[in-house]
Image (cartoon, rainbow, N blue to C red; front, side, top):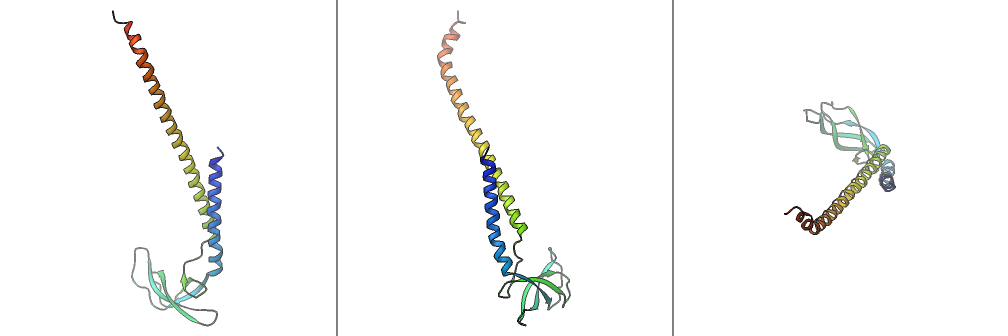
Length: 155
């Protein structure tokens, strides 16, 4: 009874804290900047995104270019928001606190399911072993009693 909530809480908190150790450095290291497309994005893809070259200016007036995914049909010169790291390279957005919290709940839920499934599997295994033992005893007793009992009906 105590193991299920303890395992779920422990696993969930561990996953949350681990994710938060990722969130904090990523949030400090990454920032969102406005970039301009340097070419037209033509064509249509299944996910509606295509690679295109973008250009943005750093705080030190350094102009940087890179390739990123943008929505198909976006005209040249349009602005897009991109995430960059400290070195000015394109990167993915930082993990959010909501994602860390979701990871904690998900792992905690999986731990609860795992502990519950383990409990029911152990219970079923125990029932199986005890039933086999009981049937073996019945068999042994029947082997002793059956000849005496069935002899009463032979005449």
